[in-house]
Amino acid sequence: MTQPLIITDDHAGFHNRNRAEDRLLREGTYKDCSTVIVVPTMGTVPTRVVQNWMNLMMPMNHRVFRLFVENMEVGAAYNQAVEMILGHPDLSKWRFMLTIEHDNMPPPDGLLKLYEHMDKFDVIGGLYWTKGEMGQPMIYGDPQVMPKNFIPQVPQPDSVQPANGLGMGFNLFKLSMFKKIPKPWFKTLQEHIPGQGTRAYSQDLYFYEEASKYGFKFACDTRVRVGHFDSSTGMVW
Image (cartoon, rainbow, N blue to C red; front, side, top):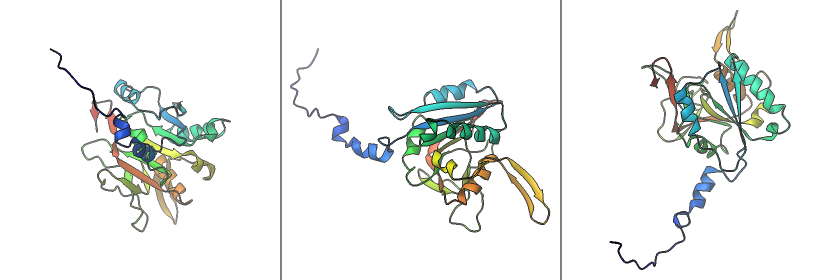
C-alpha cells in the first residue's frame, strides 16, 4: 500500500546542491574542446576494441571528427593525418588531436579526464603498458632527472605525472604544437652514424624528443587506465 507523503523537500536538484560548477571548471568542457580523433590501422579493428570505443564519452555539444588512416607505416600515418588536418580550412582551427591505436581500450570518461589538465601540458596520455607478463608502463623518462632519458617510470597512482615521452595509444595533443615543430613530426628511426653512435626510436619517442626542444611539456594521467588488447590471445594487458 502506498504510504502517505507530505512533500517538503528542497527541489533545487542534486547538481545545484553539490556545486556542479566546480566539476565543470575542473573538466574545462566550457572551453573549446574541438577534437580530431586519429586512428592508424592496417584495415581492421578487433570487435572488442570497437565496442569499447563506442562507449567513449565525448564533450557535450563540441565538435569531434574521426579520421582513420589505413595501411600505412604508423609514423607516416600520423604525419599524413596531421598534414591533412593543418591543410583543412576548418580542422586547422580546432584545438586538439586525440590518437587512439587499434588495440587500445580507454575507460568511458578517459577523454574527459585528459581535458582537465591541458592548460598545464601540451600532451597528456592515458596509462597503458606494453603487452606481455613483463609489460612496462609507457611513461618514459622523469623530466627532473638528468641527463634526459626515456627510462619507464613507476606510475604514481591517480596523478598527472610529468614525463619525457609517452606511447601514443591514447594521447591528447594541442594541435598548435604542430605549427611550430618542423616536419616530419613522427619518424620510425634506426640508424648508425660513425663517430656518433646508434639511434633507434619508434615514432612516438622521436616526436617527443623533437617537441621537447621547443619547450613543450608532456604528462601521463594515471587515472586514465587504458587496456592494451592482444587479439591473438584475447588478453587485455
